[in-house]
Length: 252
Image 1: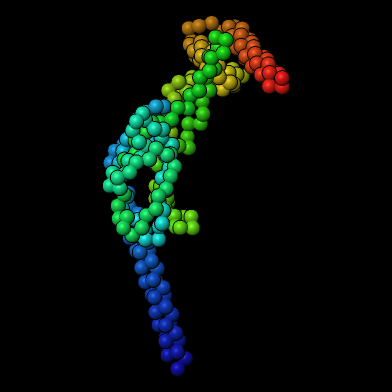
Image 2 (image 1 turned 180 degrees about the vertical axis):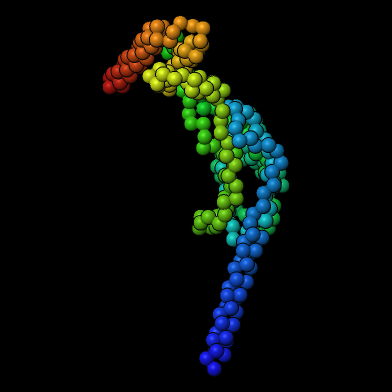
């Protein structure tokens, strides 16, 4: 009797397990089937140069019924008279880097051409014959970030994030030179000069330091270091003086 009761319980337990497994598989298939599909026509490189023109087309299908809005975001910069976004099948364009528009059950497909330039991260300033060159971050950019939300702004799906890194050949070359320098003091000193914007000066010193047919590094780099420090000091003094003059004019 007990054995029969146990067998019934085991069968019942197995039946419940099969039921939950079937429901899980159905939910998994449903979520897979409802996932938004994107096809790309064109190339989006992982590493690009400043000012490089990028153009590609996305075809977005299978938008879930729960979505009320689709949001587009790009770090590309507008090129001349060409729009950043051209929605060819919806007959409208946009130059805004980030924007969204409503979708509904009738929005079965979205075809958009994204056309823009890689942003400039190099900043050059001239001051009394001295060129200061600084750089913004080179990572954290994206060709497109596409999300779907409901009417309350809640996220339905993150459809796409296509990242890229901006390459500066001069920076890559300088890093290679720095890695060849064994002396930790001069390695840090040249990097500091470079970070402060004295790119040409730090590059000149690095060129000499990595050439084996020049003087021994400590003989000539000491006056070179002093000259570099003087340049940085003079620039700092002049900028401070200019700020003081501007502040004085503002108080008058």
